[in-house]
Image (cartoon, rainbow, N blue to C red; front, side, top):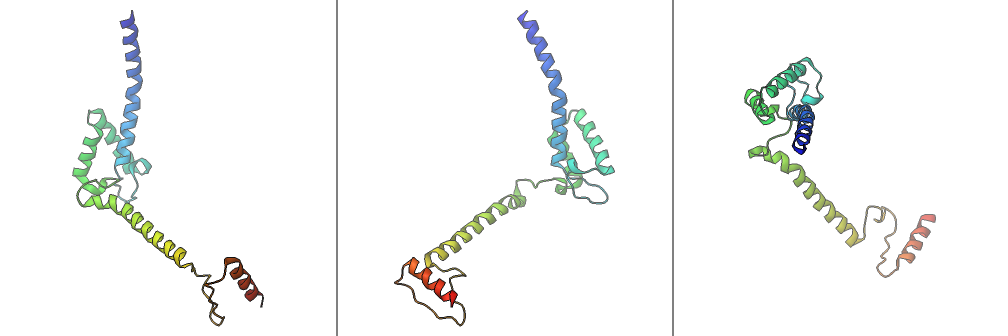
Length: 158
């Protein structure tokens, strides 16, 4: 009896997983490839609504129904159109720079911003602390911050 219940449960769950799996495969395929329509829309297949994309989706479904995997279908289209059909560059060879460059730029920019902020904090000068042209230069190395503030306010009032 237990075997019968387990068999029914397995058939029940396997029956529901195959449409979801097919929909997932189709979504993965549409996300992996760009539309190759005549008007060169430049959209990922999942976002494109042109006539060419509808025909391509039908071709995807036929290829998936014939037993091909998503990777095999992607490879067929790469062989046919070249790597420009991929929605993301491959992670090998020269294309690896497309993956590394944004992170490297963020790292270098972050280090540069950190250095600039440290130099501002260490010297205590920002653009607003610089004496303006024609105003007196006040050496304030010996004054406390509250005295400096009072002096600045007095200077602005006059």
